[in-house]
Amino acid sequence: MRETYHHGDLRRRLLDLTAETVAGRGVSEVSLRSLARAAGVSHTAPRNHFGSRAGLLTAFATEGHLILAERLREGAATSFLETGVAYVEFASAHPAHFAVMFSQEDLVVDDPAFVAARQQTFGVLCAGVEGLQDAGKVSDAAAAAIAGWSLVHGLATLALTGNLDASSVRAYVAEPDLSALARRAASMLYGSGTTAAPAAAERKEV
Image (cartoon, rainbow, N blue to C red; front, side, top):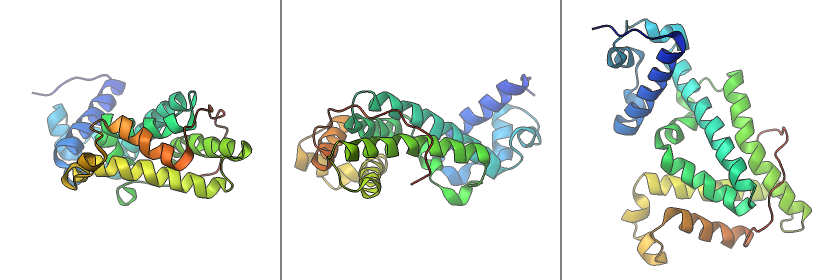
């Protein structure tokens, strides 16, 4: 039975089905035809919204960056350390988006909307480390940005892939809560991070 959707509703439904597919079976299992079947629409309907599989995944990744940027801003309002915690919490809450956002081989990486959304994400990070540099807490903002991103992205990836538990790291550090572990790890790199990060302006990507 064919379903009837308003134009925007079908787009939303296809993005939601993408999240379900990625979370349940992985990015490789996403196809426009299977999503159309799951949505109960013609196999050509998804192309009217996204053009191609890469277009669909790029729109999904763009959405992920916009959500992440907002979460990072909320964390930055408290401190730069909480920006890192917000990154890990986003990955935990949105594992499908997190998996696709950095899967460049599946994306149209020069898509203007995707580029702009990604710049928002890294703009918050850059503003935070530049604020630390201005306060004399780090001497090299670019290196601090890469170090901070590597820390939280790596921690999130270890947690989502099960390696954090498999390697017994949680038992070693005696910290069962991922947010608390992220906060503890980030504080080793940047200190307590009690200073709120400045509002992110438009910046070049890291």
